Length: 233
Image (cartoon, rainbow, N blue to C red):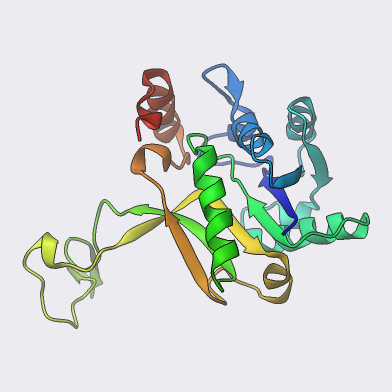
């Protein structure tokens, strides 16, 4: 399968302004995704989809190609799936055909090469349409997560089921990470949502599954990088 990697990095970020090119341990956040992709032989090209000239310049500096994203696909309310479709079509219209799409969000700078190659292998050896990265959930909706009930009450998410009294007895739950998304190109073009088809996954240790959304996440990722703890597993 021919594979192309994409990094989707819009200019606007309310949780952490300028996040995508904010220096993390001396390197723009964007560069972590690009540099991982550059280490994977199966990936033949790396594109950064962005609406921001500063991000585009940083992407080119790191050796990536740039896709100019329309403003309507870069707003807070725009579905990233549409940006995925746009990027694929832009590459195809340039005369390049490929089978496998990989998205490596900037928000997971602690991912390892093995996480991406594992997702590609999983996609190749199964009938799945897309492979996502997951990590064990810190909270379990069957045991210790609640939802509002009326105006002044809360109840367990599994309120309609038999109450589980021990965490160990609850079904295993995972968080979706932003470490890697590997998908068949036709699936993205033909569908309109992540779970519209057959979804498989690879498990990522929590040390590498940090998802940077705000300054607290950023500082945590920085601490893990400096200590080397992210790569102990």
